[in-house]
Structures are given as structure tokens and as C-alpha cells.
Image (cartoon, rainbow, N blue to C red):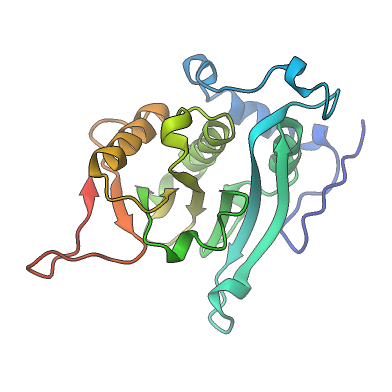
Length: 232
């Protein structure tokens, strides 16, 4: 067994080896259907020869973060950078060596964002598609949904046209309802926003009777002062 060292800062990290957690990884990986896997566009080994003979380079570079609510600190101070993900192997090293959602407490978030997007995504008029999940289903469903969504993002499963408007994703553990959110860039194209939302539901196999809601980072209101939200 080979120990893999990952610089995860002050995060809830599981120490040890890949084999220590391989059962959990395998269990969650099995929840991803083969139809979804075929939608993920990883570059071929041939494309990686110039940069790294042994690793699969991702289409985009990603950054991972952890958030833990602390009212005595500024929001940004509660966000801790974990590590960068440039290769497929980086992703599995990150995933295997951090605690699963079932092991975290309420008020915790994991975040996955395209590099160079995190600093400005919350302040430029974008928004997010949000799936709310009953905390009672956290152990049964949330870990699988989160792994599934991360793989879809790093694998460019939304397609190049839609992926260009996607900044990343956040999973949030909350008492009133856990949230899985897909963050988008600013756009006034409601058709595009709806297409991404429908793709989000389809790729994650979210049942048709469960709604997802689009929330603006900076709330918008109609002429009657009602907050504008899209629902699918």
C-alpha cells in the first residue's frame, strides 16, 4: 500500500492510504450509471504525452474549498482552500482523503470551482440551480449526488457550450435542508439558464416530481416586489 500525501491545509482530512477508504469510494462510484460515465469527456492518454506520461489531464483546472460557519469571523475567512485538481488522479486523491458528507456537521460546505472563478463568482450577478435534500436523506443520497456532480463537472459532461457558463458547484449541510448547488455565470438568457437546469436534473437523475430552483446571488424582484426565481 502506498501512502498518498495531499496538502489539504486545516481540513477534516482522513489520513492513511487509498485502500483505507476504497470501500466508500467504490460504493459511491457504483451509484453512477454507465450512461452517465459515457457522457464524461476525459482527454485521451495520447493528448497527455507532452505534459505527463502517467496522468490524465482535465479540460479545466479546478480548485476545492471547505467552509465551516463561524459567526465570529468574516464569511471569506471561513473559506479554506484545499487543493487544486488538474488531473483525474488529483480528483480521486482529494476525494479519498477528505471526509464524506455524512461525517461532517451542519454549517459545513464543500466547493468545487474552476480556477480563477472563485474570487468573483459571488459578486457579478450570477446565480445557482439548487436542489434541496431532506437532511434525513444525507447518508443515503447526498454523498452520491455530490460525487456524481463533481465527476460530471470535471468530465465536461454538460458539453462545451453549457459548461462555458458553469463556474462550479457547492454542497451545503444545513439543519433545514441540505443543498446541492450548480453555480452559473451572469447571463440574461433565460433559455440558456433553463437548458442548464434541465441538464442538471437529467444528468443527476433527479426525479421529475422533485423541483430545482434558480436563485440569483443578488436577488432580483418583479414589479410587485416578489423575488424572481426560476423553477424546474
